[in-house]
Length: 127
Image (cartoon, rainbow, N blue to C red; front, side, top):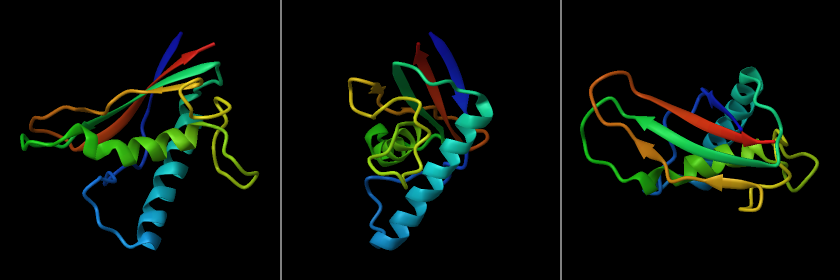
């Protein structure tokens, strides 16, 4: 089992509470997908039989936040790691699909505290 971290342009995160126009949400989702795909390539994350993906968020302050509000960002990131449903999909194809057979998506983790605001993915690859 291999464990790697991928850093990319996940800021600002998508949230369940966002009320974006569909075209703006689509643009923001595409930025996350392309960013995660490129960061995973740079990190040298190999293809495998199963991925376990955890999204981590350090907001840089101590305000209360719900982990489940970050699920749209996690979904876009996982879409970028798996093979897409069409030929024009931008997935990295580390696994054939992002269903539970090939990918475990852990609930996002929030790390409160003062400091730098950042998001990162932790990806475990099972050969």
